Image (spheres, rainbow, N blue to C red):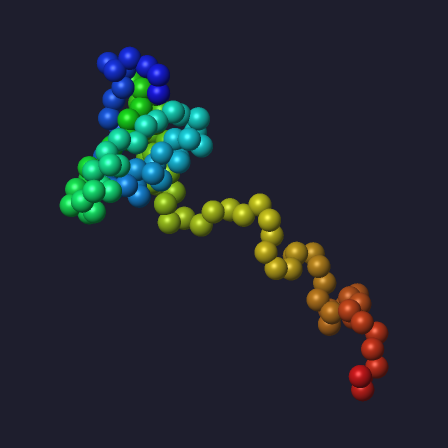
Length: 109
C-alpha cells in the first residue's frame, strides 16, 4: 500500500486465520489490503486472539466491508460446482431401454 497514512483505515480485527481469509476475499474483489500485527501472534501464540488487523484505504473501505459481509453471509453454503460430479443426467444406465451394455461379453465370462 503506497498511500498517505491518513487515507488508511482499520477495516477489521480478529484472529490471524480470520484476517487472512478476509484478505483473500478482498484480493478476489480487487481491493488492496494489508495485514498488520502478525508479528505479535508469532511471538506469544494465542495470547492476543484479536491482535491482527486488516487495513484498507479510505476510498475502498465501504466496498471492502461489503465484500466481507457478503462472504460471511455465504459462509456455510455449498459452492456451486461448474463441473458435474458422477454421471451426467442424460447418460443412460446400462439396463435402461435404449442403452447399450458396456461390453458384449458372454454371460459365462
